[in-house]
Length: 329
Image (cartoon, rainbow, N blue to C red; front, side, top):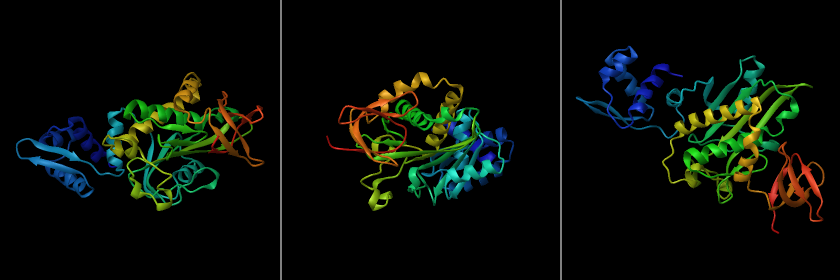
């Protein structure tokens, strides 16, 4: 990331709507006034809008509506959170890129963030539409010190933690559809999660958590076949959402959720979050499995994150994986 640009933008974020003098910027950043002017011109070319006054200085009026690495870094600085972050303009899949970097020996944990994906993927080999630069395509990579069986509820926990973050900080109430989808109140899909891991017999060797979150995309930004199925944060919120700030804050929230998971303290919030954000309990569903599909009413989850299903005959089954479809009673 452009370090000088991020520090420059940090000053404007701290100033909010107030003027920042060119002299002050030059002095605090240790560069000339000409260098400040050149940087501002370059940022203007990238979509930033500054107003200028000969007496007062510059005011940041608006920012790009797509991910911009120096602006993400500026927001991370304000959060006092500095993760190892790899930003890519375009990639096949952030999960695939994270896996390649782990295989090459890159030190973990780290995050991979991309403006666009050309081969984004979800569970069961499905494609994830990833061509809108105002959405969030993100993967976190870890080499955790946990046993394989402790990874079972991980994706569910990360989704619940994200729901709680969006609810508290943006006032956006999403629901979690077991095991890996986040839904708008009207049932359309806003986000999908995908966890992939390499396991030894006694520990998780590598783990990659991927998130595709529709942030600023409008209905017309999706392919026609997805417009009745997909939604975004912008479509369920009246707030003016800034993608770079949201990306930085979600990075911090997910990183914290992982730390809580690794330390084992996540469990105290797991069931309360489930009760608040679950959309399936009490619903009649069909679950596609590798064998015969199952039908029944969802009765919650157990401590491992498996779904508890009550069949029409009254029998209770524990479902550890599968694809859920809501059915009419």
